[in-house]
Amino acid sequence: MPYGGTRGRRALAAGALMLAWLGLLWILAAADGGDPYCLPFDYDPPLVCEYGIEPRDTGGLLDIYPAAFLHFGFDHLAANSWPLVIFGFLAALRGIARFLAVSFVIITVSGLGVWLTASGGSITAGASGVVFGLFGYLLARGFVERNALDITVGLTVFLLYGSLLWGVLPTQNGVSWQGHLFGLLGGVASAFWLRRGDRAGTRPRRRTVWDRRGLTGPPPGHPG
Image 1: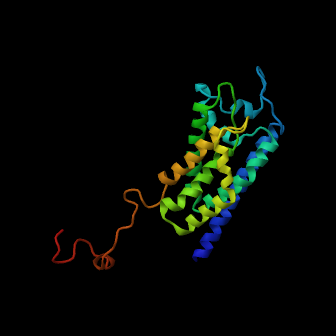
Image 2: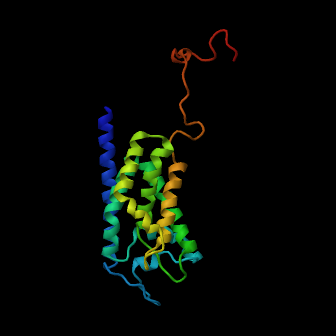
């Protein structure tokens, strides 16, 4: 298949994945009524209250995963929607499996960071950790892999959305700067951990003329 056709199929797959992801987030937000409140002793709490991250609660440690898909209302979700789709689409163009692995690393690092460092008694949820993680991943990926196209994408993303970096600072009450900071770190880390071609055994072996003839063993007159 021509390269352009393969690239087009990747773009369609990436777009479909991110639209499905976004659709799931809106469905979950609607299930919570669009404006949920977390009340003490609520026997039927909204999903975001039940599965949000509660710092140092060992029984709810695994909530770091569902929390990335839940939001405190439609306004909260709307603020995350476009950057999530744009960054996710650009990241997923390099392959869906790799994108899912990157997202898993980001959600894990961001969630654990919140679980360890957020204020006691708080509940944290939302896709902003993933947004910051994908932002960091796109910034670092091209430089890690020395790919000119990915470097260009990363620089463009930085020029357009670089102001996001202010979100890693504790400057706004009620906003999880910890999720942003650790999400960003998770994205950069995933660019290194999941880079192409640098792990042992992944680089193609240079073939000699003898190899291309389909023969095995060293050429005559050379030691084995």
